[in-house]
Image (cartoon, helix red, strand yellow):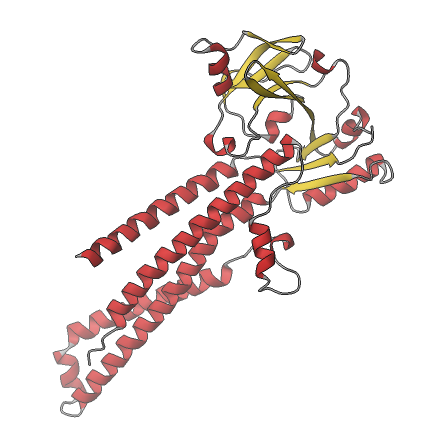
Length: 374
């Protein structure tokens, strides 16, 4: 009884883990793909409007910069950006709309709106950021998955050329994505090539481009990799079951043939032979299906997640698993921290799924193959 309860509990927990993992993957998949370029030590250099105009011919570009302030007890990160920024982050607007670039408007989260205005509608209300007053044009929903990645500050988005930073619209960070919002293969390489063509390598030497275009492939690999392992285990189980049944039937009818003719054996065991034939046919087709799935499986892991020299370099893997972004900018650290958090979460879920599946597999294996009846 206790053993049955344990098996049922493992199955229920395994199903819950798979459902939760699918939910996490789907939530992360809604984040737009993008490349991020940042001047590490700009030395007074900035990305200029003409740079953006040239890059806009082939890419969708968003400029941004950040200022940290305090409003009362609330720590605020004022994000100065443009009308394209919603294409680089998954905003669900609950009230109002994104700001117009040429107005002193602001977009805030639903949590900050509740803190500042309580139960009242925030759209149309004014907030003071330093010496500048802004009208709230929209409120976005702060999702639980994203909150785990933020820097602990409330975020307020304002137009890049608003009065908050005077007339200074120079920025040291750019975001880029495809015109249709999607990034194809080697997108970051093409963007870097275009960027150098635009500016000249000598003008922006201290830069860093972050490739955020294939993260969903890596995150999805945890689930598809788990499915691959399950398929492999099922293939081994079916082959073992087929071999056992074949040996049992062979031994049974070999002994029967010593006392009876073949016709007599068939006539006496017609139903059993038919059922066994159907079962074997199902096993064969299932094995072919699994083999095809196993062969077609594509394992996608960029080079930074695999050691170049020695595949069993466990220090390398532990370093990847524990990596933390060193870039101080909130824009990059939030997006990358979100990816790292989801990466770790999916890794833990997958490890739990594999452990539970192996336990159930061993129990089933022992139940089916522990005793051999001839």
